Image 1 (cartoon, one colour):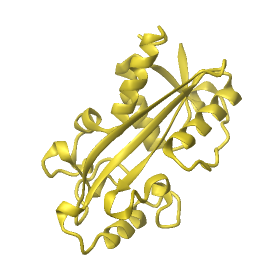
Image 2 (cartoon, one colour; image 1 turned 30 degrees about the vertical axis):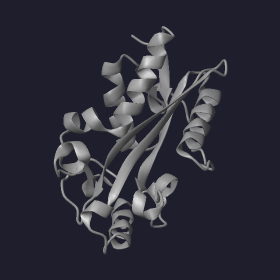
Image 3 (spheres, rainbow, N blue to C red; image 1 turned 135 degrees about the vertical axis):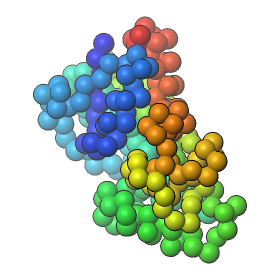
Length: 201
């Protein structure tokens, strides 16, 4: 079975495809499937609701089982912000530099022990018969005082995952990042659910 991967974010699409392949989930992007997907307005109040909106829309428009995710950064000192607004935290959607600048300014007076945060990813898979699978993965860590590393995207240069001894997510190789990422954890749960249903290798 081939699943449609519904995202317009090229960097996220690359990462999702890279993680899904070894999990035994065969995916096609909208371009590969020859489908022009609607850019869904994320009107949900949670990661789960937004992932579901995108997966439902992609399934409806393609007639294929569709996988979509919604993800972001939740900072404890900010009450979970930027949360579902992570991509547009500074006002302009997808401006990673401005988003990081705003976050670093908001936490400027906080010591490292109070800079706890987590990356969150919710994945939703919707089938043409209406069946849905919803999973969630998290990667705990802290917000750094400044950027480091040249890889990744989004908030990766200022996120220090607890499992990597002070290295930012952007300083890790793809393999290192995938091993601990919130997306990997959510997608592994999806793969397990699909295998239980005989829908993945």
